[in-house]
Length: 223
Length: 114
Image (cartoon, rainbow over all chains, first blue to last red; front, side):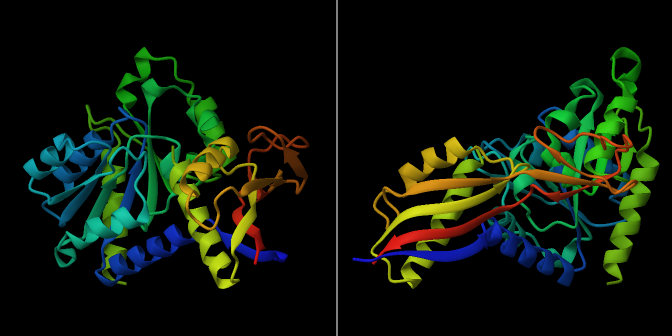
């Protein structure tokens, strides 16, 4: 019997990252722009998605992948009611979507009929940050009632994203939310991060968000 | 909770390399984790002891090498270490900073018996 050390140096998330890269390639070959929406439970992921579908559905073909930890189709049903195809992923209690689940969801959609694919990740600010799924933009929705300290408390998710939505801005008059403090936290973790301030209630801020999505979808179409 | 998925990934990489090296047993697994990787060592070890049962990695020990976080200021180029969470540049208080190290997460090596 001999004892020996075997050098490996392999990224532990490599298997997931490779499938994520394949997913992105799959999306690219169909000219689909895909966004991964992450947030804590109750930040307004579904509300933002529904509002976005309402505003864009006459201009492009939208589909939604809903990640849920239980077999409840509440969100998927709301999306379907707006006429957008929705696929539900039941993670079976897992706290995040991973690239394999995304791959399976993609295979159950008709990718030739989609311009914008929205993935609603499981409501959680920790686990989804570690798992790429292959989308073009990773987006966090923060919301005013959650408090201004969230970037400081959940730095990993804020560090890895491409775009931030600050939702429920209509509640600003009622809640002690220091925007400067919030923004400094963001700046520290992710300098220059693009931020959209939205209210699903009043629709404030939506035009800029919608224009951003339209520009991204057009760019992806022309790839 | 994502530690379970992460541990499964560690097991699959370790098993692959152990088999390639004709190992009869894996005794130690060396993992490198950056300060900013949101992984809890104890949880990984806990899941490891369960999911490595009846595999070539059964009863092996995980070792974690923690890489400290190093930050570079984009305004004044000061380099500094952070032990807890991100903080502004200690020299010029700028928040425009870049992470140099601290996000590592890889399987460095395994120790095996043939």
